[in-house]
Picture 1 (cartoon, rainbow, N blue to C red):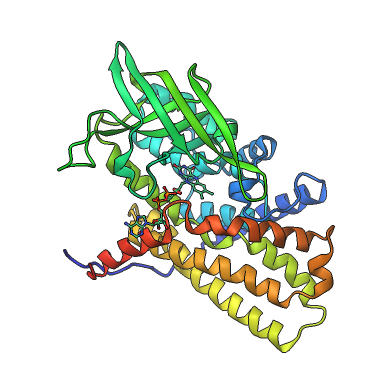
Picture 2: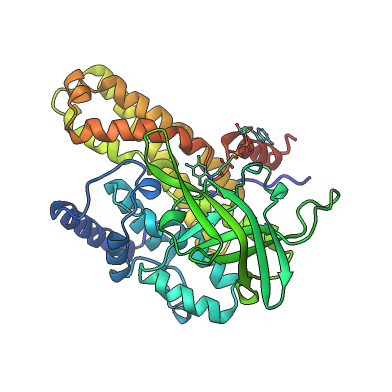
Length: 386
Ligand SMILES: Cc1cc2nc3c(=O)[nH]c(=O)nc-3n(C[C@H](O)[C@H](O)[C@H](O)COP(=O)(O)OP(=O)(O)OC[C@H]3O[C@@H](n4cnc5c(N)ncnc54)[C@H](O)[C@@H]3O)c2cc1C
């Protein structure tokens, strides 16, 4: 096994991205002031607002890096980075469009039948079409090759039966990019016989059941497929080529700033309370937090730079996701330890609400998108340690 080094190139923000940041900040400040949203922790996985997503689409901030010939905006990954970073920092309700913009759109542009692509992509760009990810199942999570939900060939298409689990946003989604078994498991080549399909979630035979999380809110789902017909055109790429696509998609899923900025809004609001009367402990904690955020951001920007070069930074994304999600847990604990009692117990304060939400949501960060143990295994392999 060859060992390749991790790459985190230094990235200079171009002037155009800096100007864009000002525009995005103005938009978010105006939306917040006008009641367009109330900031929330973990907003990309818990703040579903089709109306807000449409406004983001109207501003030209969805499908930013996609080629204009497919309906995208042909901008750079760094410009997209600035938009996602500002949305996360503001705690804006971006969940409805997040998955389609981050990974399903690029997957469709690369692998979908041209007619299907042209039917779906412009609607994603407009903030009017949302997607979910159908990888995990009741007995399949880390070991994705054990997917058992089946697609059988029938006249003109495929018949799908089985259950997908934990599909974030499926309850508000239009399509699910779904990994299915299209031929029986070959124990010597377990990654073969898997294919990716685009399933219209309004199709007959699809049942979506919300699952309440620890806070009693529904953000993910169990999705049942019973004799669901999927036309041939809705297969992504080659039948049997699903595994390679999933690996590429996971690199995009793990690569963004959401992995270390999900709780940033909690930190920002807590700062407003803490600056009034800082103790030595507060200063020490804030120093540690800021140093870590700067380091993670530097690494995360390096990944955006690699994406801009056309690379697929799977290992770098795994490393940053592992470090970032551990940091998010630590961040909330640190904020809790320095916030004064009155801010913690005040039920109606934004800071207390954000902290409460953040603490309830953060345990999921080290599971979704691949658990930290699995990521560490990948990193160890990259370093030649296994
Ligand atoms: C909030 C949230 C949102 C999610 N959204 C989606 C979604 O939209 N779509 C989707 O398809 N899935 C989604 N998931 C599912 C997520 O991808 C899985 O939970 C995750 O991959 C782990 O799978 P599992 O839950 O089956 O646990 P398992 O794979 O059964 O793992 C159980 C434990 O064993 C450890 N383990 C397993 N294999 C190894 C190994 N090889 N080495 C070391 N340790 C190992 C794991 O780290 C874990 O601690 C979501 C999960 C959460 C929590």
